[in-house]
Image (cartoon, rainbow, N blue to C red; front, side):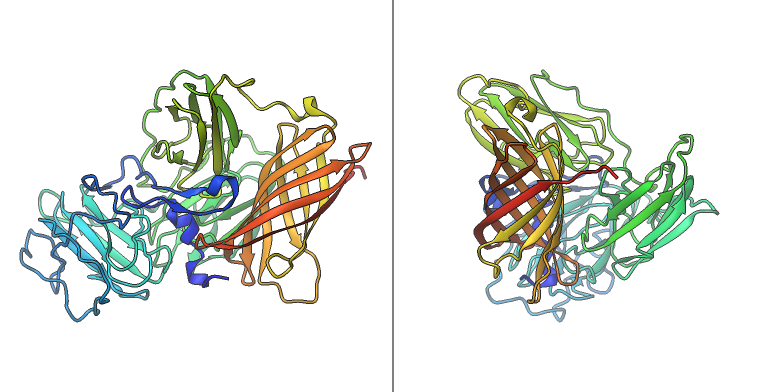
Length: 538
């Protein structure tokens, strides 16, 4: 099991800049790649692009002139040098090519104060290069910019500061590491604060974000109640519903977000930057006549005009939080069009293209000229994955064949037991799984009782199923938590099971592969699967 401080590596790798090399993340589904992530459209701090740099080291344009005592940009610190006493650069650190007019922030460790300098004041249009001389990967992430993962021992990332204001940031992997960049306007004045805190209704129920937790983490309110979250923590955070009902965007320290619950139900949410942070709002009562929901946190960029859709030959819907269909067969030369039908921003990031951030309602299209298999993911929500399989001849169907046409299927709710042959890699689990008519499956896992101490447990999973000649095939990826209920990695399953004559039970075998939160393979194996239909009648 990887160090808990590294549990975000897999998710963060999808948010890497365009200078990061593609890295392997999973053995399943064609070795899903860790891909470059798009910067946010309209972000006040935009990435500076490298010139044909494919070294994989995330190299920026070079070493800047980080401040010492003044910590300011060229407006009044032309010749400032970075403090030599901050840390000793590892001997094996790579040299960074000089970049004229770029200031430097050095990453010298993994604790508070290890962004050096931690506070920097610059002029409008100034670039800042983050140089990682530490032996671990890091990020610099806030509402203004996100560098993605900066590789260790010499990796760099450069941002250009083109909007005045105050921009706090933190390392997603080591949240105690924080910093702030202040940008002067044309008059040499730094605006007081960014408008990150929206006005919270006086009667709102309040949840405080502090110490990398939502406090309280679970609340119950009547329908019609407005719940407000305030970030009283040092790092930035998000408040993101797992079913797409609401998403705050990145909240800097002091920022707030509110949402009115007009319908009854249980709403789970997480911080996208720190997935171990989880909370639940339970709304009880009748449906309230829809009023406009509270808007996202102030200061967030408004959605841009949706991109005009290309020829809608092969549509894929992006819903929170999956691609539908997740696996798509098309003919060579076909154009695939993705539409964000959810309520949260997403990306389509693959080896073939990168959509950039798609706000709700926006579309992205790509024409696949040659046959082959292409995997992709959402860079913001890396658990969202998809595959485009391009055939040399025309695909028989533009959309997946409904399972009902393939034979008696297991539509409905099932109780499934997974028994691995090697319990040292994965413990036995059971799952309550919902087989949907559209060929998708959702599962909630729990570990089977045992004598040993479990180091990781499966939590929730999504996938696809199909039936042909009484054989049910299941492909599913599930999240894993460690003993402290923090994200620990993923497990991917491929199962084949024979349905009984009534189609209400099955038995068979499965193969699985486990990947740690850091993206390293942790083991694989096989086992037996048994399942039976669950009646929902009282």
